[in-house]
Length: 212
Length: 212
DNA sequence: TAACCTCGTTCACTTAAGTTAAGAAACGTA
DNA sequence: TACGTTTCTTAACTTAAGTGAACGAGGTTA
Image (cartoon, rainbow over all chains, first blue to last red; front, side, top):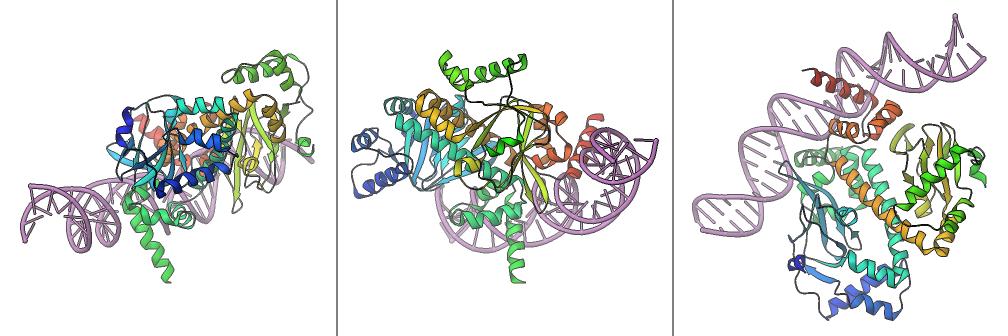
């Protein structure tokens, strides 16, 4: 498969690999209970991939069918508008991304790239259709997961709309403090809907307030 | 059922009612094909309700299980923060709303009310669980619908993040021109993430530009 | 080592949104 | 009709984000 050139050879059987498999099954167990047979079907699908920092998983214009689930590391989605990168989301451990282009079957409007060396599961929508039709359980899990993500994203969107850049930054500091450490400032800035200079200034303003 | 006091008696068999039923079935047919038997199961559920402008369908603090689908009219979701209404979404014809509190089973953070006299389907999540388990087809439809809404909302969120209030207004003018007509300005303003005064000014600025 | 990037910060200046207040228009209702 | 309320607009002033430029710290490459 073409796009998989981006990936290092799929993870082989070492101890780290076992941890990743358990991470995935733990996640799934929040929604459905899998038999060993069903687990083996999943494991036979060559889902696990290790991806180097900077790797571009999806480019603007591509018609991808791939969904990602982050087992370790961080990936981000961004647009290039007027030659400028606009980061819109970060996905870290235990978070899933199905790019809109996979759902609406149109060329992608945005890019997905790897912020850190990461371990992901990479699945294909054709593959998912097949698994879902074989095991209705998976269909149920997908429904539950989409509904949950829809609700979460709704709340994130609402919080964004109803707060100022400064409030958004403080909110992020509270909810995902790790992001502020592991992600470059200019990517954080556009994630917060502002320019890097404004983020710098805003941070200075906050530490100034803290002193007094 | 308690909350249904908000609703006028469910729609009876008149010609308008027939149109509404067809509207619903047309919508469903985009995802799955229903047999007459399945349609009758749906019709037996007392889904259709006519709701007066101003009716509050969901209040902050409530633990609701109700989802809405707008057949005719307009409903909106909003928060009350520091005594101020913050409108975050409008749902018009052929749009569905499942409040986050229904999914995460927590008391609602926000309100849902009727912007115009409307006709809605009102469904209950217990009822949905039952129908889904009886007809796996519905499960599939729910999964497809959630995935589609998730992708759409993702795009909306990204557009919001990457554009200025003025661009957002112009974008809205382009994508949902009806909203600007049928919704009060101060509700539109917070939907755009700004104050009503700023929306007024922004509109004046735009018409000024148009002249030159 | 020198030249070159990228990244984050700071500064001065511009632009637009927030705030407060006031008034006009539209609406509902007694 | 008259009154009060809500809605929208305008204006003056404040505050914060956008813009363009400059600088230093780190990292990379020749």
